[in-house]
Length: 447
Image (cartoon, rainbow, N blue to C red; front, side):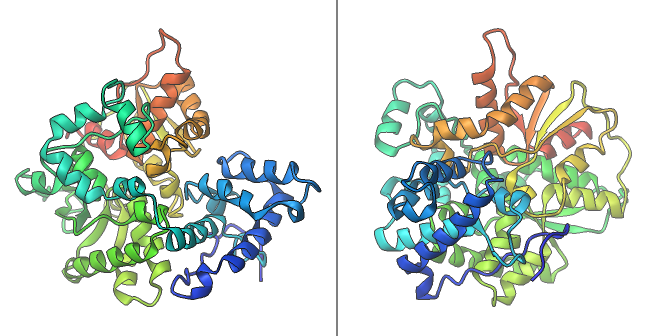
């Protein structure tokens, strides 16, 4: 065993088909082992709400140590984890290959998987996670759906909170009547043959969010890559399963992995790179799926062929160069680096990409937004999510830049909500948060 160094921590496959993976006594034993390490370290005290809950639980116990803590108190600690991976990737000194072998997020995931297998998942939690069905249904009546889900709708939002458990103040994404897939069929985007990167081909994995909720990100990605000379196609077999992963439904996620990986093989065979348009989905394809299915060669091949979109633009710039015509963005940019982008361990690719834009002030924010996918919109967690996201919101407020951007669209929306809470009556908050690829498209004169 070794420890220290600058290499990425090592993540081990999830042995989720082994009955011991779900054994409550073995899980409790591992929780106590890891929590005891965390109790003695406390380096993660300010990352999220899981660690303060854990440390308060121990400090308020009879002995002030883990031996006097009832295991029933562990559930709130597990529930507060957003699976952002920042404790594992950026903070914990005891991750593998250290002999303590601490992987806090995947231990929380194991607890949720066992809980889901034993007790099932709450009905409305399951419904929120059905992103493909929800996107299709809401897209068919997008005007009505967006009216009903709009923050401030005093008729529908209190009812949604009572019935569905979605906090009435949580900002929710809009739906579009035409998916990104459909728009791409007729958008007329063609590769720039004069660009240095001409000859490369990429298939864009649309992701559920871009496909149903924000096709502008997909359109900007297509236009930027075409400007760089890349021929692009769009595909979307199904959602990557991140919402189901949050709930511990590992069998469902594995099924999605097999389906998407099988669909992508023909593209990879024809020389296409795979580009995911949101970092959570890129993380699933690159890392989470191979950890769930370590012996699946098709899943492994997809993981090796996958790029996050900002990572892909930076690689093209480094390998081939960029065409002329990238202009400045006046007013500056506050860029939030999404946790699931950082967890890919490829560096600050969104920041690197925006630094290719000349004469543009860039403030980089490296703190979790607190949103955590569907976690942050639930009524029991929304205020916690706002609290966790206060540091990045405050930094964006203090910077006062014209643009706020995040690689994670949900994180961007959440940071704006945090900014609105921090702002005084006369303070101005940007109207929207951008994906970095949208700002790069704007700088190239493509949007």
